[in-house]
Amino acid sequence: MTRGSILRLAALAAAAAVLAAACSGGSSAAPTAAPDDPKASPAEAPAGGPAGCPTSAPPPLAADATATVTLATEKGDIVVEVMGSLAPNATGNFVALAECGYYDGVVFHRLVPGFVIQGGDGEFGRTPDVDPNAVGTGGPGYTITDDPVTTPYGRGTVAMARTPAPDSAGSQFFIVLDDQARAPLESYNTYAIMGSVTSGMDVVDAIAAMPNSGEPANQALEPVAITKATVARP
Image 1 (cartoon, rainbow, N blue to C red):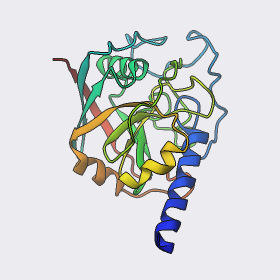
Image 2 (cartoon, rainbow, N blue to C red; image 1 turned 180 degrees about the vertical axis):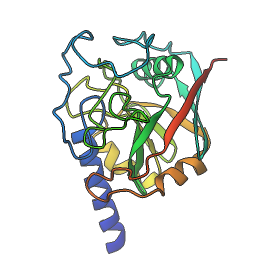
Image 3 (cartoon, rainbow, N blue to C red; image 1 turned 45 degrees about the vertical axis):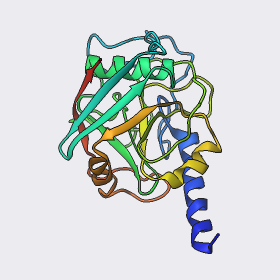
Image 4 (cartoon, rainbow, N blue to C red; image 1 turned 180 degrees about the horizontal axis):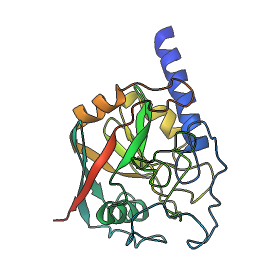
């Protein structure tokens, strides 16, 4: 392995460490707010979403069920196929939040070139009121039970973000940009894989190329929002 490859893997491992320390409901790439208490009741925790969205963990997606989630952005559409067999709790949650409009107007707040783009903080990352000091620390007001990781990470993988605490995923998710992210992500192996991008990786790449604050936070400086999330079922 060349020195450049070693340095590249070291950088990705560091990014994965930040992801582990900071993703999802109660986290950020460089935390500037206290994490939400994962044991807080839905009534006590901030929901941060539209009326009609879940206030507690939605039912799991059946193992034989699939859904297509389309994330429309100003850069184009990102089409994601989710499979209940991969992570029933995570996919049931992701689909329910997409269907109720939770992700509408929510930005991709973290951009790590060659690694991931991350979004889904409907509490602090919803336009036009994005809170740059807290985005990445919010969630839907509840957390979900962890799913095991049963398939490899790779370019186009869509997975739930979470803190190091068990059962801490909420609404935030990420999309993997490069196959080289596999090793650092698998070193944690805690981010439930929900499915993959079937169309629109050029859009994901365009979002990843937008300006960011640099390491370690990699906060989007001109964040791109999901204008509309829609769900189609077979």
